[in-house]
Image (cartoon, rainbow, N blue to C red):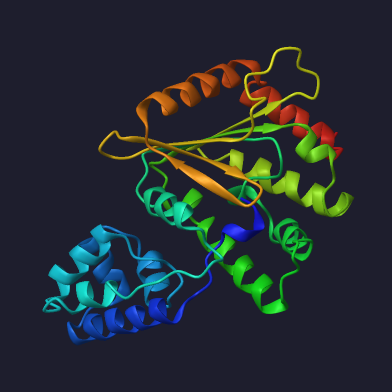
Length: 273
């Protein structure tokens, strides 16, 4: 993820979160006991109450019913707004991420946000143009780390990552940050629900030359995609467009190293024996 696509809490989000918390406490429920009623994790409930996550429509409807809120939550949701730190197209994608059956990511520019270490992400934010304030950097770091919980909180979601070798060879932030990044990627890739492949530096035929690819499947077996550019991104729901991206991703999987060979390559890049 590029640096300008993470959320910053808005006053309307904070207000909605406070209203939700008030109704939850009035109902005598904890965040943990409300979570199964709205079919989201306790951490997601906490994030909404803190004004850090935009509540999806399904979340609002289920919370309204579970808490007997007399329509108050739906009315409060009408006044929700998002700050420019998270583009509208990515809000829609972020809501789908919370319940996805599978997610596929091909990246050739920088490490995907879900795989970044704090040090790597901080260096990216510190080098944003126009420059960010210290407060903006800390807010975006917190948002990115919060989103990374998806990898461990959703063990039934299948994650696939295809990364270019040069993302590690670039040494963004320096050699030490890169070593830490490789260690982190190797650790994450050991999870059963995560498959990671690396495209070697030399590849005579390449299906991903048009740029990054992100694909997602919902529990209803709907398929979506999005693509990022310098100053924004495009949310894609057209089946024809998605079919093309799925075809390219499938070929990329065959062109990349196997997960086992990718691990060997990363260990070698890190300098492991």
